[in-house]
Image (cartoon, rainbow, N blue to C red; front, side):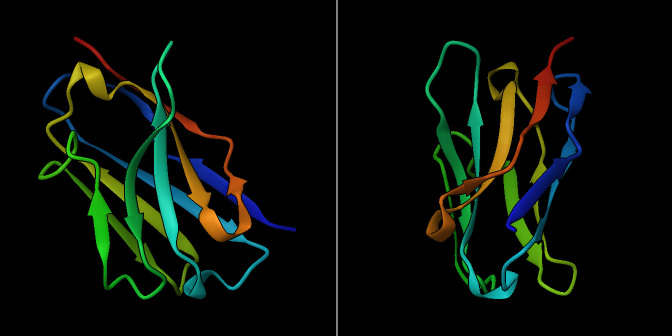
Length: 114
């Protein structure tokens, strides 16, 4: 069955960096668009970044442009989110999502605080 397992979250100071990973299984990973979402406490879930199956097109939320980079390694069935210059507003649970399968990972907590 489809599985998405995120990792890489944690506590980081403002200005710091984290790299999230999402390992996928149960489907032909390289043919699917992948995305990252986040949800802060008391707020709606927000789309952060999207990448095509071949990795040749990406898009980002305005709030993370220039700071976050989405990428993928189809040989490892993994999608990444490199997060730099982190701000307290980036705090939340980050989840990967496969739009065509409407399937979510369990999420990984990111906390940006001094």
